[in-house]
Image 1: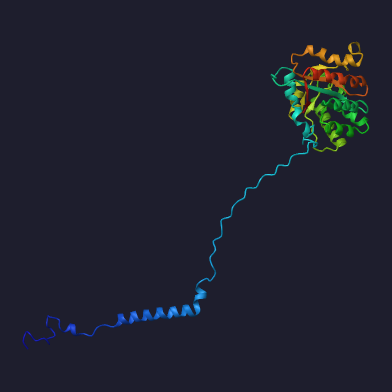
Image 2: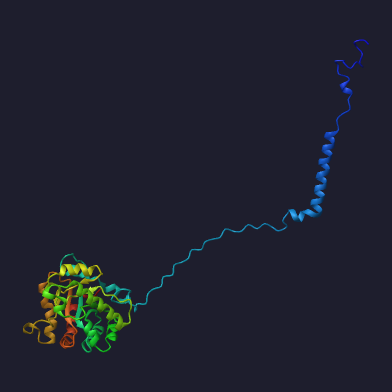
Amino acid sequence: MGKNDIFNKSNSNGYYRGTRKPRIWPLILIFVLVVGVAIGVVIYKLIGEEHFTSQKPVIAEPEPIETPVEEVVIEPDPSDLVEDSNHIYAAKDYAYSAKDVRNWISSVEPYTGEKLAFLTFDDGPSPTNTEKILDVLKEKEAVATFFTIGTSLENTVDSGVILNRILSEGHGVALHSYTHVYDRLYPGKTVDKEYVKEELDKLQEKIREVTGKEKFMSHVFRYPGGHMSWKGTEEADAYLAESGIEYIDWNAMNGDSEPTSRRPKDPEALANFVQESLIYTKMKDVIVILMHDAENKGMTVESLPKIIDDLKALGYKFAILR
């Protein structure tokens, strides 16, 4: 055959290849895919829609809103005892730290406030005079601090009733030892700090017992005979302060415990003695007045109305020690 034989298999023009049958597998694949999708749609619609798709509406849960909780403040009853203290809540505004008052009357620290008078009564309670003094204080609208003795509590009928009246009427209860026996408290005129502390602990417990107030705690102490009368007081003061107990003396008095030779002879003289005693103190804007409510101090009861009236006339406000 010639060069132009179109049937020659080796012909470079490729006409032989162009006459091959076309491949059909891509068409088959497309057909299968289309049929498979169609079948899947039919199955989904007939039996699978409810299994594959939730019919319930989707509800978004709201974010929780935190509502601020208001703190409920319960106001204490004014007649309740301040816990671990020697007075009720109603007396808080006129109750002053014994340490501060001591520093003021001794001029260790300056004082620039209003004039204050602290009426103080030692050695009680007594079955007669203490309640009479309370009657005068109530009538005159004045307050005071009562320095109690353990043996007086033991020897006074209804001593707890008296102490509870002292507290309920806005006064303070302070400590004046349990026995008031100088030889035991101050052997060789030197303070036995451990014995004093033992007596004060015993006295605190006795006050709790007779009043029924388990939370009572007085932080105010007066040395029998006065702080200035004994040796070894600095060490004893520090020892007592570790328990939160502070001592307090006085810078004025009515003279009811002065030696007989210079003791005032009548109630008016007792009242006048308070003002006369102020010449010995530099601090006259804060005065702590020593008096007694023991059984033999009836004249003090009689002098008290004038003492209070005189102090009011001089512009003093009455306060208690805590």
